[in-house]
Structure formats: C-alpha cells, structure tokens
Length: 209
Ligand SMILES: Cc1cc2nc3c(=O)[nH]c(=O)nc-3n(C[C@H](O)[C@H](O)[C@H](O)COP(=O)(O)O)c2cc1C
Image (cartoon, rainbow, N blue to C red; front, side):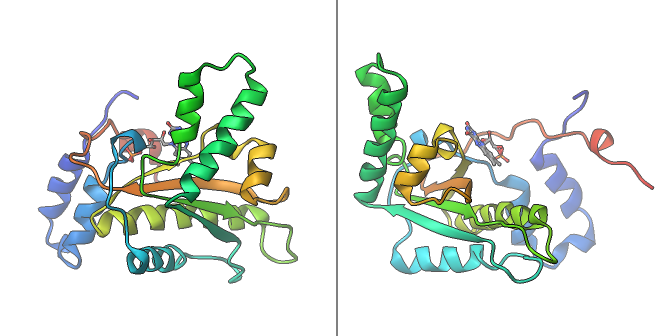
C-alpha cells in the first residue's frame, strides 16, 4: 500500500458535498466506525428488546433467492462461560502442555463482551442460487449486525479465531458439519474507540472500465 487515507478525511471530503445530506448520520457511522477488541469491552450489553432489534436488522440483508442461508447463535449471560469451557477443554486436548493462563484466555474468550452473536452460514448447493452468493449474504449479515450495533451506541468486533475452524468446538456449539461460521460478532460498550487504521488507497483498488 503506497498511500492511505483516514476515514475522517474521507468523511470530511464527502460531507463537503451537498449530495451527502440525505442521511448524514449513516455516512458518519460508515466513516468513523472502528472495531474494538473484546478485551476492551464492558457492559451493559443490549437488553432483550435491543438484542431482538439487532437480530432483526441483521437479518434485513440482501439474499439472492430469499433463502435466508444463515442463522444466529446467541451467547449471553452464563452461556458465554459454558462456551468458554468448551474452548478451554478443546484447547487442552490440542495443546496438552497448555498453561493455566492460556486456558484462562480460552475460558474468557466470550466473556469480555456482554453479547456474542455467532453468524452461521447454511449455504448449500441449490438449483438456481450459486453457493458463493449464499456465503456472501452471510458476510453481509455480519456487517449489518456490526453497523446496527454501532448505530445503537455499542461497539463491536467481528472475529472468527481458531474456534470457528475446529470441528469439535463447532459440534459442541451446535454448528452442523455442512455449516460454517461467518463470524462471532462481539457486542458491548467501550470507554473509547481506537484511532482509524490505514485504509486502502482507492487508486490501488479501483479501475474504471
Ligand atoms: C471474516 C472476518 C474474520 C476475522 N477474524 C479475526 C480473527 O480471527 N482475529 C482477529 O484478530 N481479527 C479478526 N478479524 C477482524 C480484523 O482482523 C480487524 O479487526 C478488522 O478488520 C478491523 O476492521 P475495522 O478497522 O474496519 O473495524 C476478522 C474480520 C473478518 C471480516
């Protein structure tokens, strides 16, 4: 990457244009949102009503063929500790010499954020709809969930980590062998948000036909 621009400068440039006025709060959110590491998160998380709203907004996602080729697994309250026990047990199986600290990291993996939503891709061969497009829709669900959470005043982190690729962990979480985890979206609150990171220079990712 030879050149990068910050979200802030992109926002400033865009807001200077009168064309940006239709929904400025949305533009602002898109220009400023940053992931926050779960370790920096705290409660309170979304309440039951907010969680339902978040999931409804996430599910309002483009989906070729209206297949809804994805589903959600919600981890909140003590379920986060139960998931952590699964991660720690499996980690120890794979790493017999694991230290107490490493196992503690696994136990706490879902306990930093008050809410973790697993987005599971259920994409499968279909007569008309390519599987790839079903997978893309699951990614879009993760992004919608991310944006909805931030619009509601929370912070978020869209992560996969080793737990998304371990067959034993997935089975214990109720993910079927023909399903895949598109992401675990951690949602909570944070005192502050990180500075923006370098973004791709448009010159490197845009061509005009
Ligand atoms: C599908 C997907 C999986 C990710 N998995 C991980 C992960 O396993 N570990 C990690 O540290 N970050 C993971 N990330 C997060 C990114 O590394 C990084 O935090 C994020 O792209 C920051 O984006 P932002 O600056 O736009 O908020 C993942 C992101 C995506 C989209």
